[in-house]
Image (cartoon, rainbow, N blue to C red; front, side):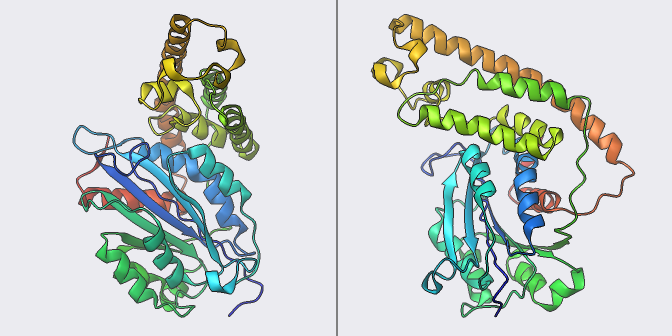
Length: 369
């Protein structure tokens, strides 16, 4: 038992479609459990800065002719300000396709002391998240940390068995020496879970390559924001969050900001709950039925025809910007590949996740374009 080792775990669930579980089609769900004790600030920072790289990798996934859906969920565990009865953990975010919300929640995480119950948090993740029932879809838990895998009253072996019964694969990422992780059962957890055991240096910041394309991609990312039409009670607030998350990414680096801009241009960045363009396009809102007071000020005095043409114009503008970002991203990826060819990059959180997701994808007949 540790008194000064706070730990959070974040369930990072990705399921390839825009949201609702009742929607048919291929899906990727990934739950990432992160140890965020006082010594694990580097791990949290990797999650914050590398979220967009993982999303961009998933943007190339498809099954047959269909594109999967992306959902993300976050849990925190090992936090002493949460009661012992709750296991020092809570669900931060349920499954969602709202990438801005996930980014915001990642940046809100704070460390503080507590006990680290790997078995219990895996069990809670299986119980409390709305996992897809189709075993042909990708369902993965990642748990990352640096303490013994055996802590707590819930047997990690039973929790992992519970996950496997639901077709969920459990991968483990030990933050420290490879052999130490084996000794304290992290590898056994992955073996039982049908997944992969990996180790990373959480304090070693992953290599981030600045590219000649970053500046233009970020300019286009900001221009992309102008195509979003906030509506409803939460519209303006959510649009402000969009800008806030842009700024947080830029504070990390121009390269991280570019990766976020690329994610915003992908099929996974969809905001039907506050953006009129996405809502109309996806059949979540009827333009003729929206109250005047729920529209932005510049649309309130428009005729219905003018409103329709305005939404269509923003949609066309968005497609054009997304296309330009995509073209630049192809050049950017080639540049990064050339720069890293002989760099001997060490494993990081995002590279460990991407490697495991690709491995699982092969088993389920997904492919990456």
